Structures are given as C-alpha cells and as structure tokens.
Length: 333
Ligand code: HEM
Image (cartoon, rainbow, N blue to C red):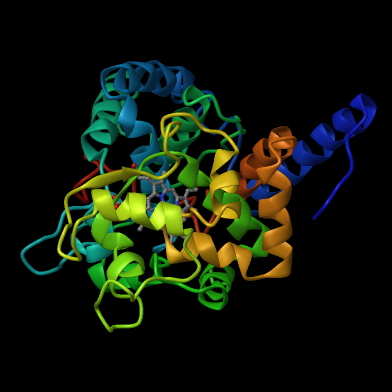
C-alpha cells in the first residue's frame, strides 16, 4: 500500500487509470454517468444547490448524510431501503438499533421534492443518497468523485438485516469479513473508516471502553488500546455507561471538515471506537494509518477515499426494470 511521492506526469496517468477503473466498476453494476441526461439533465446541479443550502442551515449534517449512504449500501445494496418507514406489519431498517442514530432523512426528502417538481417520477431516492453523500464530502472540503446513476429504489426494508452493519465493538477479523461480504477489501476498510473525520458519536457507543471493557464494570476495566490521557478526557464527557445522549466529535476540532486527521488520532490510540482502534492491529492497515498520520499524503487519502466510495456506492444496486422510482423516499409506491 505504500508509495513514493508522485511526479506530475505519473499523477496524470493515475488520474486516467482511476477514471477507467471508476467507469468500469459503474458499468459493471449497470449504472451510467449520463443516465438522466435526457430525462433530468440538471439533476446534479439541483442536488448540489440544495446541499449548499442544507449545509449552510445545518453544517453538522455533512457527516450524517455520508453515513446514510453507507448504511443504505451495506443493507440490501444501495437501494434506498434505509429511508423506508416501518409499516404495521414490518419493522424497517430505520427502526433497528444501529440506525436509530441516523440523521438527515428530512434533507433527503427535501431534495426529492425539488426533483419531483423538476422531473416527476424520474430520479430514485437511492441515486439522491449517492449524490448527497458525494456533495456532503465535497462541501466539507474533501475529495470529489464521479457518481454513476441509474440505481432503482427497493421495495423491501427489514430491521433484522441491519446485522450486516459492522458494530463499533467489531475487531479487525469481523470488520474484514463484513466488508468482504459486500465486495470490499482491507484497503477499502481502512480508507472508508476515514469517513470518521466527519461527525459525532454518542457516548454509549464506546463507553464500554471507558468503564466496562471486560464486563467487570469498574473504573479499572478500561480498553488498554485507548490512550490514557484521552480516556480521562472522554470520561469527563461521558460520565457513566448509561449516558446515551452526549455527543462527541469523532475528530475533535475538525469534525466539520473532511481531512486526514482521523488517522493522526487513530495512530495516537485516540480512535473513538474499538473498530477504529482495530486498524492498528493488522500490519497493512496499521501501515496505512501511520503513513496518513504524517499528514504528508492527504492527496493520496483523498484519491483512495474517492475510489472506495465509488465501489461502495455500486454495492448490489437495482437497475433496469428492478425495483421502482419511489414518489416519496419514505414510502413504497
Ligand atoms: C468500519 C466500520 C464502521 C463502524 C463500526 C462504524 C460505526 C459508527 C458509529 C457507532 C457511529 C456513531 C453514531 C452515533 O453515535 O450517532 C458512526 C458515525 C459515523 N460514521 Fe461510521 N462506522 C463504520 C464505517 C463508516 C463508513 C464506511 C463511513 C462512511 C464512509 C462512516 C461514516 C460515519 C460518519 C460520517 C459518522 C458520523 C455521523 C454523525 O455525525 O451523526 N462510518 N459510525
């Protein structure tokens, strides 16, 4: 995974190569760059304009909107299933434990409403999520990537299937298995974990590391992989195991901007989750974390993140006559 500094001609070649890889991945999934060129030619412009407004009104939504797309893609593929409401007969993904901390559903519907006015019945909620995630990262000063379009919306959302989402307590082996189940590799795991440069986390999702790591439930029962100074600081914010409301910036000081500083934290044993710390337990991911922690290779992280997002956003997509184009993102037609 290591590489040396790049000459400008090598960078151009890599840019061309990356574009080819991206379009190959998208084409293989049945998506197209110009999918809406005749049916909704301004779709990207409309999403971008709304995203600028949304993040102006609520800058903290950048992280949640990126996370929504991740949680959509890992369960039944990127098909908008995360957006569906529960029905009297079925509990939807949205109401399962890992998704109770998701935010931004209203913003997705806001953009859907605007697109329904511009091009009725045309743009899927799954495509909207993919575009919003990309624009959230760009507007947080992160990398951009091409989003191939043509995803269709699923008609099924099942709470139990959220067990395919990696929990914050996962160790390296579990993380690798859960990513592999979605066609993503170890490099995608370490690169996409960098999404934790944005946003916040509730105390109860990591407080076992502060108070109850082995189940002994006393002040000595801490995760030895957590930096001692950081432990004290986190304990002063998260006062007990019961605290499920206090929010913590995952990349303190720059949680609204997309940068490589997540890796500096992880390298200092200050990753918030066990899953972040787990990246130091494998030689290849540890090398990536340490290289990025130098702060000298952010351009490489940006390129890697863009490539891995393109892969993630094509997981098990529905295309052609599969699924539907929902009228409302929270309801099947
Ligand atoms: C590697 C496995 C992963 C685990 C175990 C994990 C777990 C979590 C957890 C527990 C939270 C805290 C939610 C809360 O308390 O509100 C969180 C937040 C977040 N995650 Fe992950 N995540 C993983 C991968 C990813 C990936 C691949 C992305 C995107 C590329 C991502 C993006 C985010 C963002 C942006 C937030 C902040 C959300 C907010 O501000 O509300 N995560 N993650």
